[in-house]
Length: 104
Image 1 (cartoon, rainbow, N blue to C red):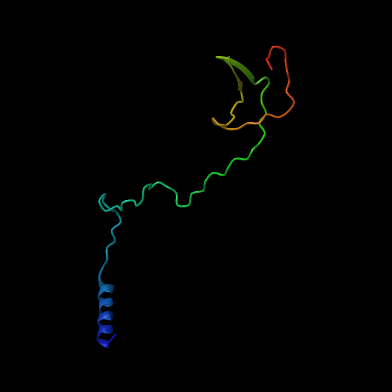
Image 2: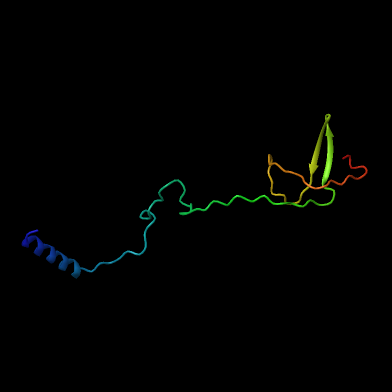
């Protein structure tokens, strides 16, 4: 830079320092920036829910019922608040109790 350019820059800075700058604190609807991306509500650093661990679920007394429909036998198991969905695999363990009239 030459001396003239430096002096012009200094004079420009002095002029800007003397001007009063009014900051605008409220924006109109048209001045609000538009969201970028497909989901403006998304979190910046989302953490996926950890996979649940397999744990034992104790059943109530006599939770099994059997239904025979069109020659096919279905076994229903009642488990309150089981948190399972269709297609989940469940393993039953322990000594079964066979009672008269239960059909098992």
